[in-house]
Length: 372
Image 1 (cartoon, helix red, strand yellow):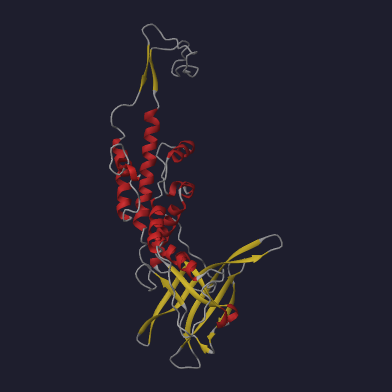
Image 2 (spheres, helix red, strand yellow):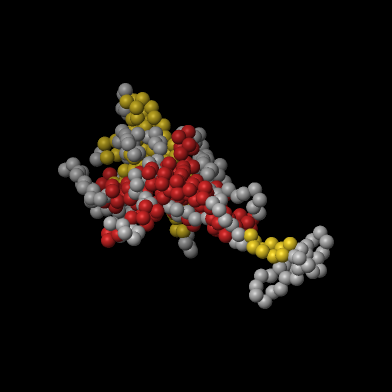
């Protein structure tokens, strides 16, 4: 369950992501893959389901196809979102701020829709960033821009006037440009920065650097942007990082990270269970005594075909019979799958329904049957 960390090389800038970014990058990707569902999980192959030692490519593909993925992450997330937005959010703005609540982002989203996007990311990976940006550096054309956890690549804090502030934030963006026959996406980097104001001792001034690496990967085009708000220089970075419990820049553990981890182990158990069921459920045909025309050391020259129109010729006193699975050899795997599902249910605040419990509640003679 290891993903390669996102380590962009920014020519001309010696930028290293904090350790907490690398530590959490893999779990963010795992959570997103779980939320996307079975198709995404299976497409990652051995990242989530290791092959057995005896598996060649064909055997592993069969093993993978028989596994099923019970999406506890999405079920829990949907339940939490329903609880969080059971009532629509309300917004109260100061009288001197004129922002159209029906159009707060550059994509034209309403404040309510944008708040749901923040809630979605906080409940999913536990981190989201919002930048107040300005079209053409004009404060009258302000809008909100959202950044997923993976795109908040680096940040730096320092002391200023007895307060700890963030004076550097590195954001990763995809810039889309139009070509003659379509579009082209380029990865760029936006650096939000506070630097000493040369015209005001002891004060800081906000600016942005937009870095567009060239095709050679060794040089960059750097665009410097300065801002002012209502004729005043901005002395802070208008960027807020949302975490589950605070607005500090440090990365916090995702709310449903433990469920995602357990969801992957549950997926592995279902693969082993279905693998065992497949082989245990298939009867094995056995003969004692040789079939005619046996080649020494190689057995029968032709496959033995089963069916009413096929005859097996055995030597005198030879026998044929079936070996079938009996007993409780798969009970351990079945119990493991059920146990992990109950653990995910417990971690998710019982937002995931228990199939076995629901079936019992709606069975014959149940007093709740009429409500099922």
